[in-house]
Amino acid sequence: MALWVETASVELRPNSTEDDLQAVIRAAYRQVLGNAHVMDSQRLTSAESMLRNGDITVRGFVRAIAQSDLYRTRFFESSSPYRFIELNFKHLLGRAPQDQAEISEHVQLYNTQGYEAEINSYLDSDEYQANFGENTVPSYQGSQTQTGIKNVGFNRTFALVRGFAANDIGTSAKLISDIAGNLPTKIAAPAGGSGTYSNTGKRFRVTVTKASYGPRVTQSAATFEVGYNQLSQKIQNIQKTGGKILSITEVA
Image (tube, rainbow, N blue to C red):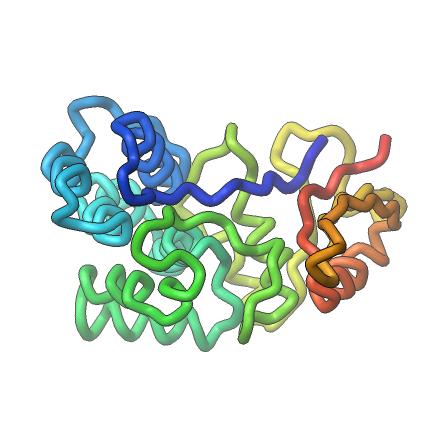
């Protein structure tokens, strides 16, 4: 069972075709709405038209989705405040909140400035601009080394990202205990998986794309097999050397 799904970046380039545009729109809905099915009657046709006409960028389209009644209903009105913020990080920055200070900052922002300010704080951040810019759909960043992001962020993002078949149904925050207690987050498989993944006797196969070391050296994939107790350290070592984790699979 694959435990991590690496998603390719989806970018709206100049002179894109209608098919290209539709691929961007689908990717944006899927990312921002947590893999939820969007009916035709729920689509933001006005924002889609503005994107098609070049009146807004992909970032503007993502903002329109996140500030829509659909997003508010699914993730704000039906969730706890911590869960709402947790999902905002996941949907808009492609990662989990890394510590209690980040959570507290966003709780205060929402309480003092409101819903739109909370959403805008992600989309207008330097982090968003550096990772996605104006015309790339946000995607999960947990398997990549990021400046200023702690290594524990991989496991925390991993806990929120459950593959293409999962969605973000659920009202309670998943990381509240770990973040509040400054505790590491355990790697666990989606519900329904085989075995007990907290068992320290488990072994995992980690598939990695090695970093390029010059124009004559092409990137190549490598596979490592490690025990549960060594998994977190192996992840940190891979990230420190510039590698990119493609998947983590339990060894049968």
